[in-house]
Image (cartoon, rainbow, N blue to C red; front, side, top):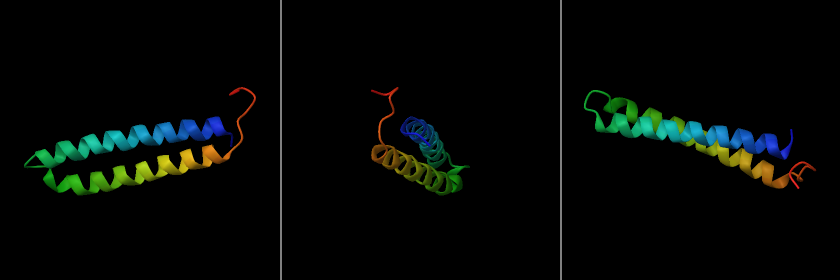
Amino acid sequence: MTREQRLTMADAANTRAAALARDAEDAARSFHDRHKAAPLAAAGALWADIARSHAAIAAALPETAKEK
């Protein structure tokens, strides 16, 4: 897997983490959905960890000729 692919995966995971964070915030503000806030926040945190992992791996990989 190339550096660019890892960065793309990190971006996708970060987008998913942000969406889950918004959903958790909305659930926390809702009287009827408040019970969903913690699981959504936990899933968002997991996706944020995945994004950081992909970014760290990408940082360790050499640049491709296309990126230079």
